[in-house]
Length: 623
Ligand SMILES: Nc1ncnc2c1ncn2[C@@H]1O[C@H](COP(=O)(O)OP(=O)(O)O)[C@@H](O)[C@H]1O
Ligand SMILES: [Mg+2]
Image: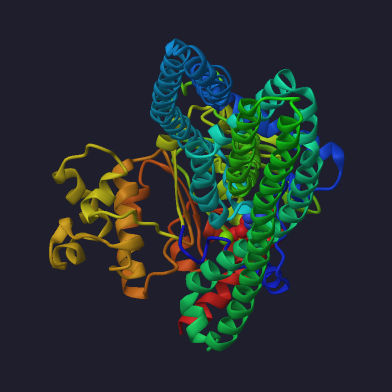
């Protein structure tokens, strides 16, 4: 596909970018952007399924990770109790009876906790990175395969910019989540529960007072999660629009410069950029309030515990050690929560990424590989359309019901006005799409029952797009028949008349074509593509305006080559220049998806129909 073919710079997208809002496909929506409960539930279920399928192969490792976190939790939760014991029992034992044993035991237990914590943290970091990487590796692979198998019509809907986003920024979000923060989340959860329970057991009254600030904290967290979801969504939306606009403007940079649109594009980009900055700033302000507020509440809780606990100690209701343990617990209670605030955004973006990726993974493969491919018994290249109905969009029928038999070896020319459905027929034969009704068969086998390899070897379509891959000319020709010798490659180039110009390039066949073949002219690219197709030697060759980009002399050259290329195979030629059509055995005139004339060119010229008229005009244009 060339840059122009990618859907990025459509008028529609531009319009959308101006409004600063993007119309997204269903697969693109995230739960934060939906408001009906049923869709949100389905979306969440879908992304949970994806997450589940990502985690399943690592079930044991994940259980192990949780156990490590439990160990870490035990180690950190035990130390305040040890401090309490040391103060309330260890010190009195020493001062009263010179008995060091309690203190030594407490010290040993403390050391054991420290070692346990060290081991857990170390194990966790190493192990979680391993699991996270493995999950990401598998996900990347799955998403790539899925995108590859999804049909052309999916890719027409789903712009390349979005494909890129799924494979880059969404993966990045998930990586960020797996790498840091999951442990904070799990630990914070465990801490809150453990601390509450332990405090209630040690001193219920003091515990109740300590937890007084809890509702305050919950309120703040609730406020934050609400407002930051909005701000965060806004920030993501604005940055997405910004990127789409950037890609679009740069993708069409030639057109932008040709029409002197720079200044206008700059203005629009500037505005979008500003919107994004504003949205980001708002998010940061909320972050600041949340982080500051959390700390404040943490300190307030400490003050409350200190004041009330101190008073309790003075009136003899509790011990100093208990107070010390409570103060330590307060710190352990609030510290991970502070970390969590930072993690919240990471979590949100990973959730959104997962929701979008799960949308892609759930896309149905429209043009699916057959479960049990059928083989072609006697290959001859016969194509048959049986009452084929086709449309891209429900409201616009392209082929209302096409019956057509092209015997093997025939060269058929398709002519008709722009939009008549010529390219659609070509794409259907190549199985870029499947018919909505009816069937298309190659040598008696429905295309839907034909294995991918058989189909690709059977049918090759050449269009104006003449795509060259990054690599040398020889490599590009070799794609037609991987593993072909240099002799065969040169021979193919000679047949299509590409040999001379290739030889004249600095490195001949080993010349690099650069990005999308940018080093060659359109005509030269087309000749390379012809050589590739000739080398592939398919039974059916389709040329859709394939020679339109050639100048007249090059076209003449290809014309001569065409007779050789098309000999012994079925060919469908779509062309505006009737010189190309003349070599056909049969001409089909198409109008609104219907065949209105069908016959050998010389017969049609004499019949006085549409083709005769076309032919007359063409002849007139020659003189
Ligand atoms: N990818 C597409 N999505 C929606 N409509 C399409 C698409 N491709 C073609 N069409 C529509 O189908 C009709 C036939 O198009 P096409 O087969 O390309 O015509 P032709 O090749 O004869 O010019 C046109 O009306 C065109 O607008
Ligand atoms: Mg066309």
